[in-house]
Image (cartoon, rainbow, N blue to C red; front, top):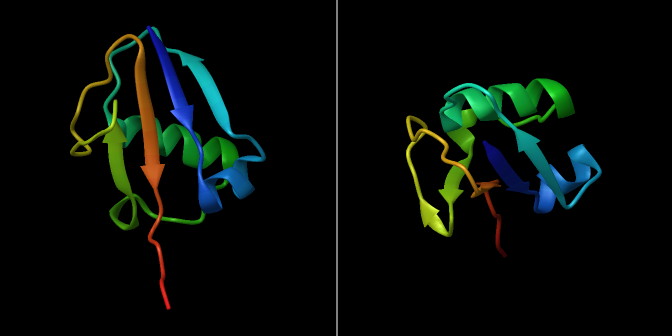
Length: 80
């Protein structure tokens, strides 16, 4: 299954890319996907600090990725 991950803010800086396409053979939840990408890119944020969105809708970490999903991990935003 093909999953596209779009990176913004700190995730873009830490991964050094705007987006990444992964081809997954196994069933994968957002929690598992984030753990895999956190290890790969050394993301600083824990999952509980991140909002999760799939196809422009917020999702829970237990969401099971589907073919052609577009996933965005949203870091906390500070305003002033």
